[in-house]
Image (cartoon, rainbow, N blue to C red; front, side, top):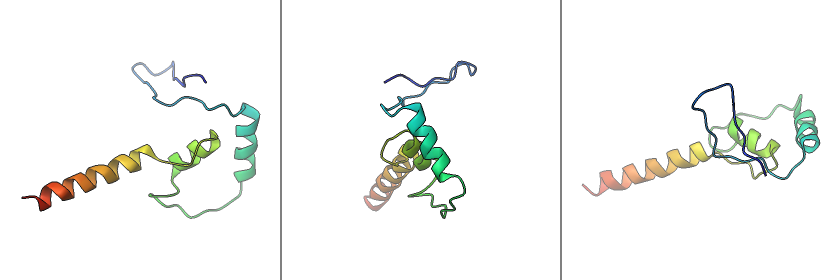
Length: 81
């Protein structure tokens, strides 16, 4: 696996790595999804879910997962007052 980077953006760093799926497999997935209309869902079907699916990973959104954890933590702290 190789690290994904954006050389043209100083300071940009990614924690993701490309999966073992080939570029042709990712291109085939993208091509197959053209024209498909799926309802947008922030929690289960957003652009990050789509990008991870294209990369051959389980469709997920670490940002949404982090927001859920922070929300739960905030609720617990609020209830503990």
